Image (cartoon, rainbow, N blue to C red; front, side, top):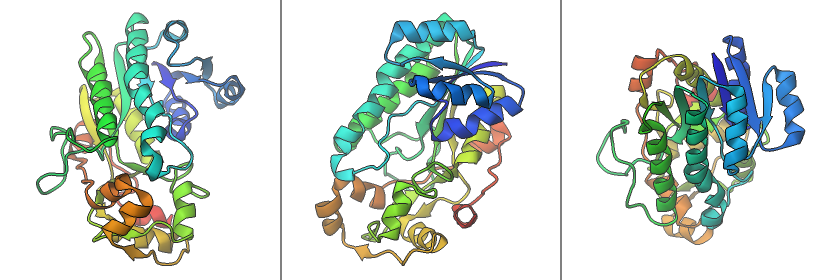
Length: 309
């Protein structure tokens, strides 16, 4: 199939592109920067230099590719996330999810694409009830600001993809990425913080994280390019874990000292309310739908083995 990959040089895009090519698809990969086009060409894709906020230029690029499937993996995240400045640092990413997604969906429709696959997140569910969150469970619509802005942006992205007439819309709610190129990977920002013992367990460390290795996320994305009913899928591993469980295991895996434990009020003072929210309130997600309907099985069923490798 002809595939237009928006975000071909990002964390997931770099792992996804070779898999799409290996599966026999003809891929046009988009980047904003001319200096990255050569790398995309060398990888085997047709490069397209375009800005998602330039609606006319984007439409022209997508029309030239004439894709059957458009994959939306665009993000705008800083190399190091400062949770005290989260409102400022997430502004670009929220804009991509709103204005950028609208432009990309319009370009896909104009080019005659039949299917759109788009990146979302599996850690935005409302922190209510017990058990793992399924795709039909509500997002955290009454979240504190500025997290609410990001939740609203997710709704706009997911609605634009799944409710556009004439398009088979698929939304992939990925878990926290780890592996090459991610914040958890070698040289990543989180690895750096854990080595410096600046990533403590907050309070009881009750926030439940759902992880996914970047290669498993890429494999799931290829699956949704090729098959699966339109809709929303959690793309996470089999073992969601509380912060108090996974942080010490991660520290051990990278040879760092055991993390500190600090009270919530201290974390709020030094890292801000967003960090406390993640550490204590985020909920884990179920991958049952993706496994049953996409025939996808993560190679790393647990972050425990993934961290070690």
